[in-house]
Image (tube, rainbow, N blue to C red; front, side):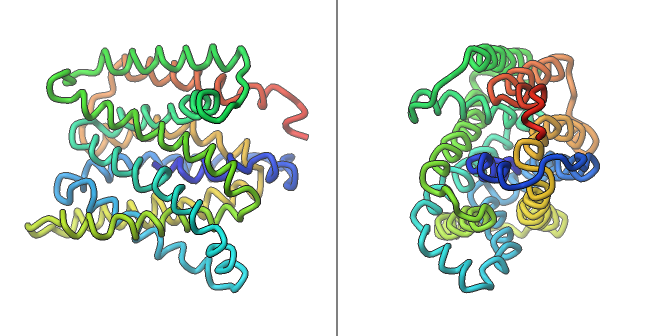
Length: 317
């Protein structure tokens, strides 16, 4: 979750990084806080989805986030840009918000917050796979190694996760895996169809179109029972903090240090997902989870080129 903002910026990251200075010191505390917020999104999903159900919960999430981001459209230029790109914004709203958010929410009925946070870290791996198979992107040897390493990490995670059974939970694992795949598709689609669009407009567009699409299904699936205040607080935190305000924080980081550096938040989110799950839901953090997390992040670093950018002095010029 939360990584959707990253995908929007990465698709135009080259242009942003070329235009913005990347020599500023990395604001590590801000990056850590953002990772903590996005890691908490999996906690709030786990807390709220049993009461609301996946579709109503996500409709509320994107609806609240839309209200937070709506002031972006206060200028005539922003409204004009939004209208001109409404169709691609709708596609991104489906593939980068409505679908993956709902898949993660459905999976949260069975899977832990830490488990989902680790699965979410496979997004760059899926983006690399889809880039080659669907969008004709080239692939380097290091990326092939990274994809193989990341796949090994997923196998370790699923195979050694306590409490998982093929009869009861295989659908939840499949849903959780499809969510980052959807994020990966959205990244490539946006690269082709939203080049030059203000990333903040893309952020609002993805939330607003998702909210419109999910409104009717959410109304039909709305829970009949009363929902207590603590669950509503989790929903507001998910929409306001983990989605709306997280976008603003992320784009502020991009403006200060560039998209490539800000995207390193990817490597911190699983740790917070596991931490919040352990602290508030008493979820176990197993050796297999830690090992798989390390393996997946190593594969992600290779497949996404993050390590190459860190080691190349030209990337910091």
